[in-house]
Amino acid sequence: MSVNLKLMGAISGAAVLLSAVTAQAEVLFWSTQAKPVEEAQAMREQVLSGAGNVDYQPNDGGPWLTRLKAELQAGSGSIGVLGALHGDYSAMDPDDLVDLDGLGLSASGTFNSLAKLGTGKMQYIPWMQASYIMAANKKALPHLPKGANIDALTYDQLIAWGKNMMEATGEAKFGFPAGPKGLKHRFFQGYLYPSYTNGVVRTFASDDAVTAWEKMRELWAVTNPASTNFSFLQEQLLNGDAWVVFDHTSRVAQAFNDRPDDFIAFPAPAGPTGRGFMPVLAGVAIPRTAPDMDAAKALVQHMLKPETQIATLRATNFFPVVDVELPSDLPPAVQAAGNAVAKMSGSADANPGLLPAGLGAKGGEFSQLYTETFERIVLAGQDIRTVLDEHKIRLQAIMNESGAPCWAPDAPSNGPCPVE
Image (cartoon, rainbow, N blue to C red; front, side, top):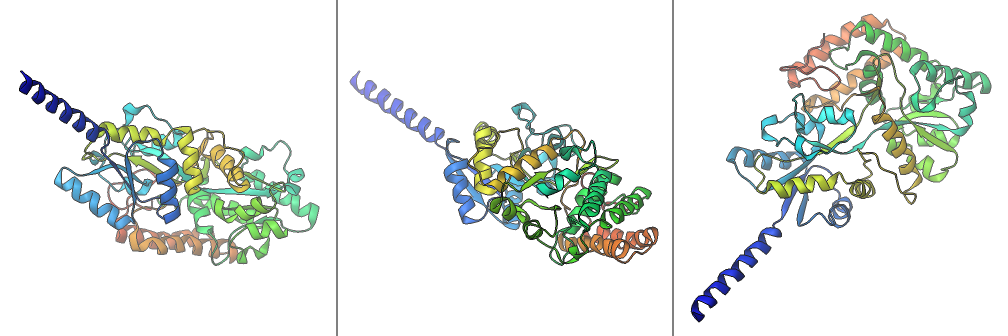
């Protein structure tokens, strides 16, 4: 009897030990984001605090994809949760990702639609975002067109605002990042084209694109001509060369941090086909080979908690994808940009133009084509239709050589995205 009791005790102890080991099993969080040492450490110590036993491992895109592909091909692996940009997921086979519909998690409707990757299921859960915004010196506010809502401007109202400032001051006070290191190409790809053509590649040479470039000429007429030398618009906000500007959140940050009471941030304007904007959207997903689905799903749910979203913002300077109240102790630039990004992505007419995906070595050539289109049409005053028809041929060659399929807001394609 005593032997049996000892045996039963040993079995019971082993079961408890096994249960404890199982409960403490690590979830490997395999990510392309938050790679700098400081960000990765903040992810481990702050963002993932309270998420259980998580091994956060950030990697460059190449090694990240190589290991993931190997595990998927083998049919088993150790990666529990993926963290990556929308473009990384859009290049994957949807069948390799677990359907996350049942988790009941929700970002903005716009982002949820993107996360389905053209399927009827949530292929990933939106996690965090960065973007480009508008910013203005408060001196510009009295010159807003009558009836204009700064959080819901149209391109026509932005142009009228520029004209009003020009008449009042004798100077063109709109600033645009048209300098050698400026991000002007992102404005055309993610803002102007989606707002006027509901596309960026398919619609490149469309009649709507002609209208878009005509509108860009109108905007340039009220733009500080020295903008061809502007690259980081925080400098022009601070020195007064520009009162209203467009740029990446990080490139106007110094103005808000140095003089937070002097400036406001607000969404990009809208055109006939919506409020085009370019989110740098990251998401979390679960590969079909995840070793512990319950633990992986619990980690995904943790990443969308409001407190986790705030911790992620502090760690990475990427903004929340859910509606949260930003703490008052964040830097002024983060507060201002965060509110503008949230309004822009959550607007009823939001029309995201995503970062180009799948172009590989052709990415630079792709962006240069949009820059050259601007230079020929707006700076050199060449005929719009002629330029678009000529560049259309070059653009199609880039798409064919890269094999890149269409990305939002263009309709999906089988094979290289066509320039229609």
